[in-house]
Amino acid sequence: MILKHKIVITGGSGRFGTILKKIYKSKKLLYPDKSDLNILSTKSIEKYLKKTKPKILIHLAGLSRPMKIHDKEIIKSIDLNIIGTANITKACSKLNIKLIYFSTSYVYHGEKGNYKETDPVLPFNNYAWSKMGGECSVQMYKNSLILRCCMTEKPFVHKSAIANVKANFIFQEEIAKIIFKIINKKGILNIGGKIQSIYKFAKKYGNVKKSFQRKGFPKNPSMNVTKFNKIIKKNYQILS
Image (cartoon, rainbow, N blue to C red; front, side):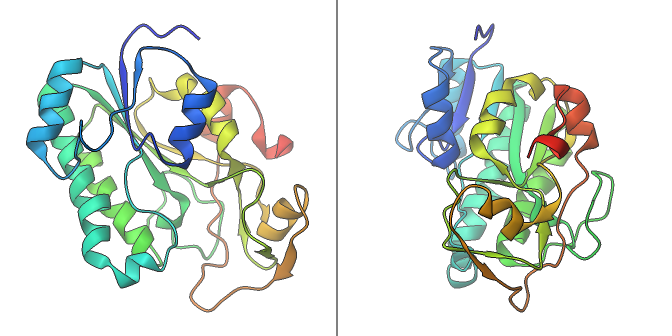
């Protein structure tokens, strides 16, 4: 892979960032740690970006699993996922840097499924609200792309999978392989695989036990990924 411009990737030590490092060895991909770029400090962010002069910033840094942590530590969730993202957005806007923000399919209501990018959103838990909060600032900046993803690690990390909840999971490695085919796009893009029960997806790749929907979990947060498939010219609805 040949990259023409520098790309800064926050959260490079996280699960998805680690996969990107393994797949791509380009010197134009920069992975600052917290001592280089602290998303809670606008001064730190601007200093690093002015020094490195990237054309694109992929924002992965934030707080994710376990989802319960967003109920127990709401201040941390707000700081990292909402305020931190807003700080990144402000810096990118000021320096005219393209911003790619990784959000989640859980921002959708989760009742009817097959949600399009233009459908209304209604997060069902604090994690989803924190990601939606990050989206709010990014959407105000037109030189940006919001990726609403339904991705997971390979192999499937949980011992059980829910049989009566539909989603469209795709492995992180698959997204990593095509990420640079979509970074020139703007707006909002759903990314996921075939719509199916979480259990049906998981059992293909490991020995998992069947479980059933917990109270408060969305029944069908699956997304319509037609736009995504057209862009990458590959039908994940079939392959996943």
